Length: 266
Image (cartoon, rainbow, N blue to C red; front, side, top):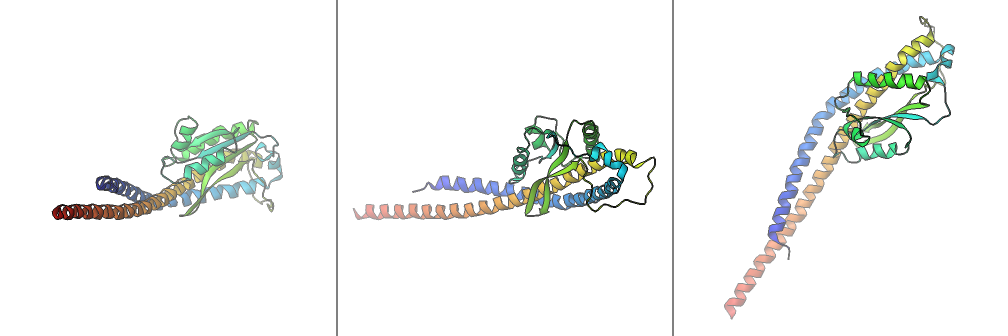
């Protein structure tokens, strides 16, 4: 027969965990609106920069730019964006699983979990600033231009919905010329190539900050979902333990009555 004292202690322990998961769910819920607002804002800026790059990439003189030259080598540089905290379901695991497919890549980690994994100084995703993105872009772009890398991408978590977030890679460099790109009537000074070279770091930085913001929104959504699921499991466990406790208590009472009746009969 189960020990009722042990069952009571187990119920208290699971109930304490339930309060913790509920608190974390509330915190995640409170952050979602702000995170998605920042995600949408940075996404609009990144889209504007992308349109500017598409106009420049249609210019014949830009076709010879190192930023638009396809390379056959496998030297890869990746910005890998993971979370600052755990308890977010498979959020971080999905990011690192995809990163393992590029074992020889030069990794620039963003997010405490990513920085801990690659033993580098932490750049927290939640407090990541445009200045941080520009600093990374100004390191990556000259190295790419000089041939240190053959491609540059951002491994981040795409926000699909509150219930779905997918780890993917967005390849940023070299710049792909749009298939239906048409030359613009705009006049560039001093020339298109010089403008492209000046704009690319801003374009890369805008892509980084947009991916970081989207990843953070995905992390918050994943944590809310994980805590909601954990809370439901904890409630179910408490119900099962409570039922087991009631049965054990009833069994103990029945046994005591039986012993009393047997004693009185003798």
